[in-house]
Image 1 (spheres, rainbow, N blue to C red):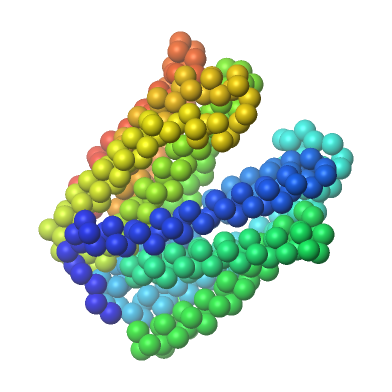
Image 2 (image 1 turned 45 degrees about the vertical axis):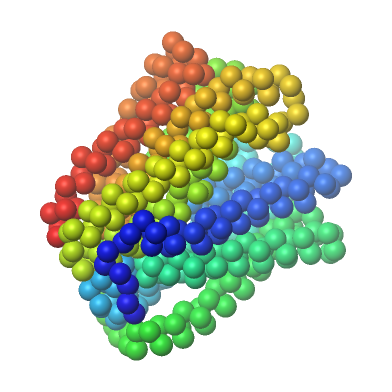
Length: 438
């Protein structure tokens, strides 16, 4: 398997292009599920799916370290040409995915109790939530395994295959959900069942594909007694735990943003919920570069070519920044139309127009933090990633309270911008530690 040690802007863009399209497929699952439930007679179906998917997504997203940890270690092993270790790394992370899957499924009752505690809904909606969660939680092993599979292919710089995997899961999910809801009239049960069925079909198909891929390209047989070596497991645990802490803190920062919005006023929760979609849309695109950088950075570290690593970092920052500028320009000329798609309430529209400047400013500045994440994940510098996030979130909490106090919603958005800047600066402080490893 040959991979270039010098990563040009064109090669990085070529790696990222399939990820852009895969990232576009992911939101469509939520859109289709929302549309299916929104077209049923009872509005409670939509409320129940909205709450349930938000909670389940947050839980699964917290285990994103299964993807990120796999990328870094696989790409570094690839750089060293150690194909046997790539197989062992994948098997170790698959074992971890199954272990946590069992724990999550056993936590079904605490999850339902937590939803009931935090969301004030009536008895019928709670029953619908219980119905959805009871089915959807069965997909946990498959969905966590998919994280590992995606990380495996990203680590090998096979972004086309990883993107096809994500798209395959999303498209099959949409097909089954539509079939179960529209043709079998299974309502909320059908939406949950569609995800369960599609997730297991996906891992069945790609398990076979990965087996033959390894057999053809690696030509090694794993020694199963070497999978659970204590030294390797401790290293893997530390990497994954650091990424877990980082991800939970990042999730908390955006939940805190919503909480601070509610303190300003109920209408600002709605306005900021609309505007934050702009940030998410831009991140879907810019994360494509970050994902590609993860695999490339680890590969070059495995090769120990410092000049190529510096070249990769510079190219990824520039490419992401220039793309973010284009995104901001598109937002500048179309923000009214995009906001109008999210709401037909004139008061909310005009209120949102007044704060749209922030979603135009943020993408180019945030692009640096996304790329730093990719570099640090690819080189497995996860303790620094964790420490930078702790520092950034702490300053974000303080700044959001103070700035909101004096400048209202503009102050809250300014604190989010400040959060993105601090993330980049704190990671740039640690960047020299990566260079010392060459």
